[in-house]
Amino acid sequence: MLNLLELEQLSAFAEYGTLSKAAEKLNISQPTITRTMQRLEEEFGVPLFERSKNHIALNETGEQAVSYAVQLLKDAKEAVDAVRAFDRSRHTITVSSCAPAPLWRLLPALSDAFPDMTLSSSIKNNASVLEDVKSGHCLLAVLPGIPEEGKIPETYCCRPFMKENLAVCVPPDHVLAWYKEVSFEVLNGYNFLLGTRLGFWDDMCREKMPASRFLVQTDQFTMEELIRESSLPCFVTDVAEYDEEIYGDRIVIPVSDQAAKITFHIVYNGTDKKYAPAFAQLFNF
Amino acid sequence: MLNLLELEQLSAFAEYGTLSKAAEKLNISQPTITRTMQRLEEEFGVPLFERSKNHIALNETGEQAVSYAVQLLKDAKEAVDAVRAFDRSRHTITVSSCAPAPLWRLLPALSDAFPDMTLSSSIKNNASVLEDVKSGHCLLAVLPGIPEEGKIPETYCCRPFMKENLAVCVPPDHVLAWYKEVSFEVLNGYNFLLGTRLGFWDDMCREKMPASRFLVQTDQFTMEELIRESSLPCFVTDVAEYDEEIYGDRIVIPVSDQAAKITFHIVYNGTDKKYAPAFAQLFNF
DNA sequence: ATTAGTTACGCATATCGTAACGATG
DNA sequence: CATCGTTACGATATGCGTAACTAAT
Image (cartoon, rainbow over all chains, first blue to last red; front, side):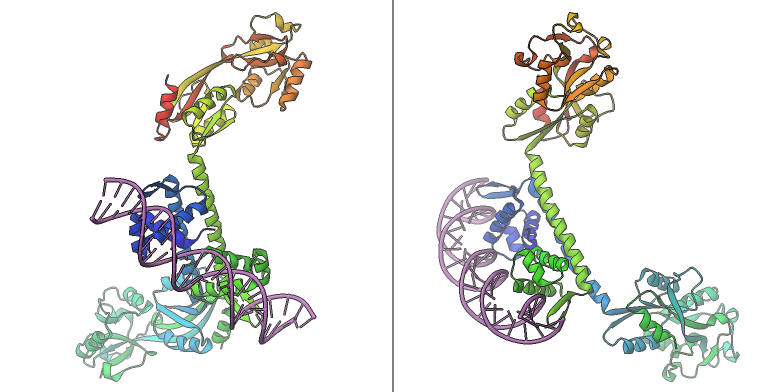
């Protein structure tokens, strides 16, 4: 039977041209590789090399053998990787969320319910989250409301999880500070500071306030500093903890639109034998 | 690195359910297979089995590993077979001929020109011969005349090789015995003895003499006996040696049609670097 | 008591590296 | 004479089978 270690030496010989070079690259002695090539010829049962007294080269059959060897080695490596990935997936619960806030509650709950599983979460826009849940790329999805009919298979379960309401946050001397509540229509045209990793809130703001510009900050510290030092409005929600240190005397004004009052929903594959029952229990309070 | 021998043991375990059974089937001791499974888990780096004190079974990851293992083993075997087949093809000149007679001259000539090559020949009808030469399934083809325009790629060479003329052979008291030569039209309606492996002659006879019946004999001895003991006409050609023992006092009458006077042509791929030059020399006298 | 799996132990052999050799340009 | 490939030889370790052990049915 073939031996992958031997095939690797064959492949190295093909790559480097001489047995000596190949041996050096593989950190083995040169006689070893000589013997391996002889063994390979025995195993294949046909000549693979043209030999002269101090020269050896692949013949046509040998070239063929090399191409098969390379393929086999590649397949073998991929197999190992795939098995490792599969094992990893068996011990990982993957969550795709449309916003950060739901994760703050969801991840601790999952960690509690599945103490020996690894949790892996990511925040993406709605479309990507939908993709993930449909492709099975994630086990749990968090979406802002019930997905439209036909967007996900019927076997998937959808349960309300928590609410979040959007608000703007402005310094007391800002013109908006007088409002008790404010609509997107009014806000449209103002420029805002916007933190990254906001998920679907990001998309929604751009959609509802097309005339506004959003000054996206990828760095958390920069964002906080700008909130303190500028009078630019920013966004907060009723779920995020409100840090006095950062917001100072800024005033919070709820956004009045229905679109700003979100009920996050959990979506998961109801036919998954391993997780569906546990998820049903977790989310059917 | 993975080892195919180990994967074979894994596959056997998956197939037979217990280590003992697998060990027995593979003619190895049972502790050996235990150790191999342990090594495999190390190599994959993840658990593949559920173990209790005297029981071991594949877990889900293990099932995955098995399916990859089976695939790899299959691929490896196929690779060896393919390399062997390739080597064989390198030492074999394959000839497809539309009739037996050309082979009687062609094979000795090839054997002479390529003393260390194996010759492999087969007789088929014209269409199959054309298929073989186009697909590269044969290196040399023998066809009855020049193939029609477009039937073979332009890069193929076509050279006249030898002539063969069809004749019928009847007992002296047969009504046909009076003819000096005879046309298919006259022959049409008579029934004939026909040996197998006649290649295209077979097809031609059926085409030119649709009203005739052909009593096909697969066995050479039976054929000869029937020629001796019956008065049924049969076919001979000017190339086949005429054995008095068999034909006795039968009379040979050439078939007058042009279609019965064949010039066999050799066809081969003119772009084949290895053989085209040698073939050109052989057939361009 | 039988069957299955793991561990312990000793041996055979496979495989490696060093060294020596042969050939070639 | 430097480089490359093959062969010889001795050390090592890898891997096997036997035997002994444990647990479960």
